[in-house]
Each structure stands twice: as structure tokens, then as C-alpha cells.
Amino acid sequence: MRKEPAVKITNVYEGVVPISSSIRNAWIDFSSMDCSIVAIESDVIRDGKPVVGYGFNSNGRYSAGEILRRRVLPRLIEAEPGSLLDERGGLDHAKAWDVMMNNEKPGGHGERSVAVGVVDMALFDLASKIEDKPLYQYLSERYGDGQPDDSVFVYAAGGYYAPGKTVTDLQDEMRGFLDLGYDVVKMKIGGADLAEDLRRIEAVIDVLDGDGSRLAVDVNGRFDLHTALEYGRAIEPYGLFWYEEIGDPLDYHLNATVAEHYTGSIATGENLFSLQDARNLIRYGGLRPDRDTIQVDPALSYGLVEYLRIQDMLRQHGWSSRRCIPHGGHQFSLHIAAALKLGGNESYPGEFQPTGGFADDAVVEKSRVGLTDTPGIGFESKAAFYKVLRALHD
Ligand SMILES: O=C([O-])CC(=O)C(=O)O
Ligand SMILES: [Mg+2]
Image 1 (spheres, rainbow, N blue to C red):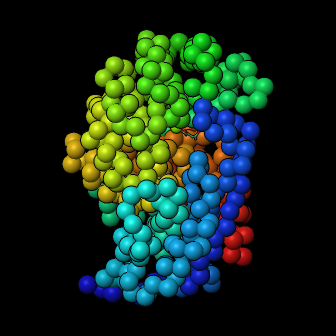
Image 2: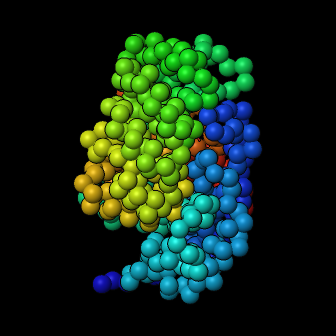
């Protein structure tokens, strides 16, 4: 086998970027939400400059800077360079993952999975840039069938509660999503009482020409079993796209009981951060492989190395990768969705800037978005975010 020159990590930079806003879901507001970012510099030189990989931690969890600075990054930097490489001298992502997780006990995943996810993303960005390929191509050759999807289903998530926001404002927001090319939209519920939420839901269905199958609703884990079943009975006649994260993400029994009574689709998993948690959901959560959706976000849950294990587990349990639509609305999952043939990816046309969203020139048509040929994840074609990432190391 031809040996490539071995890649070496020369510098690692870490920082925090605010992604705060006045929106609120049924559980949290985003008034102080922020996000960890990292840049990993290599000794590979292109156009006179080192090739750099970037990562960030999706949204919904605060920056994991302390864990990055004190645990994850020192292990990576102090590792024997050969311990991060495959037999060809390229980065071995699973080995890098083992290095980052050295001396970490199993279970209780919390923010540790977020810290590892940021670095894992940066290493994938770096490795695909070194091969001068867009990430979806790099991933499809390694972990897929070499024939990535050329576009990915995306739905527009929004419909948050916000101070002074009226039902008319909510309808205008949703009309804006349709004008951008989305056919399916998502709104928050569970942050008001049932009567008000039903008014909000019906107002949005009106905007969708009366078609409830184009509307997903998201509870962000707020309901106890009684409320979950009560809302379930009330919304079932609308035939919604899905009923999301209905109760506490780790309450598999609640989920299973709702799934027994609610015949429509259920989606959950954005707050499950490990293979073990996802496996428990499949074992005990009562989800139905013919209609339900798994939303594990690779960026929050130990990165793609762990997400690949989750895909294996799902396959073993008879689940299609098409039943996965990750949370987070970011470019990393867009590449993963195309390469691993997932069912789609979330998108937030109006929230979580500068980190969220796709390339500046990405066009959504009939709720599908194409991928660009930019090497790596393509942060370089997202000007406002790229400026923030560059500032980490320039
Ligand atoms: O409001 C949030 O935390 C984001 C969320 O649940 C989603 O995108 O599904
Ligand atoms: Mg959600």
C-alpha cells in the first residue's frame, strides 16, 4: 500500500461565539445561548498556508470550553502523532476519538459529548480538505456506497414563542419559509395552554393550504404523560408531519406509552448523546420503524464516529437510515445526510446565526437543498461564520 506523508496537528485554537436571541421554546429561552468553536491546524500546506479544520457545537447546549481546554484538547495535542493516524498516514477518526475519551467513564454523557463532537467535526473538516474533497464525497467513499445523494430533504424549523409575537406574526414567519422553498415547517408547542396552542397550530395549517401533513410540532420535552396523551388526542386529527420530543428525552416509557396511543408520526433524539442512549430509545421507547424519526445530532453526540456506531445499531434493529433526520440545521449533518442516505436534515432559516445554516448561495427548492463542491464542510462559503472562525487563528 502506498504510504502518504503523515499528517500532523500543529496547533489547536478554541473559542466561544454567541448565538443568543429572544426566542423561547417550551423549556428554555435562548437569551444567553453560545457555542464552542475550534480550529485545528495541520502541517499540510496548500497555497502557502496550513490546511485548517473547523468545528462547532450545533445549538441548544452551551459552550463546552472548560471540557475542551482541560480534557479533550490536551489529550489530542499530547498524543503521540502516530496514534492518530491510519496505516496510510491519514487521520484515523476512530483512533482520535479514543484518544479524546481516554480516562472518561461511561454513561452520564452531558456536555462531554458536545466537546468531543466539536473536535470530531473539525477533524473531519480537516481530513476532507486534505483530500481536497467535499465532506459528503469523503464520507460516502469511506462509510457509504460511493454514490451520495445529490440533494437532501430539509424542513424549516422555527415557530418559536417570542415576546409580543402574535398568531399573525407566526403565520407571516411560516409564509416566509414557504417563499424560501420549504414545503414542510416546524413550530413549537407546549409553551402555552392547549387551547392557545391549537389556535396557533390551526393558523399555521391555514398557511399550508389546510394540509397538516406539512407541519411538525415540537414540545422540547415539556410534557408529563397525562399532558402528552391529552395533546396527542387533540392533534391526531390534523395528521401532522410529526409530534416531537414529547416528554423528557430519557423517559422511554413515556415515549412508548404515547406511541401506543398516538397513531401519527413521532420524532425524538436530539437530546440523546450516545450510542447507549440511542439504543435504549430503540429498545424501550416504542418507536415504530415504519413512521417515526430519530433526530440524534452528530455534533452534540460525540461526533460522527459515534453517529456511525448509532447507524450500525439502527441497522441491526431493522431501521433504515432514511428514518434519521438530525437536529441542528447545520452543514456537518447536511454532508452526513447526503453520504449516509439519511431522510433529511433540519434547517432554521431564521435562527442561530452565525453558526447555523448552509452555504450562503444554497438554494432550497421543493424542500430539498443541494451540496456544493467546496472542499471540507464548506464553512468558507458561509461568509459571516467563516470570518468568526478565521479570527480564532489569524
Ligand atoms: O428549540 C430548540 O432547542 C431546537 C429544537 O428543539 C429543534 O430544532 O428541534
Ligand atoms: Mg426539537
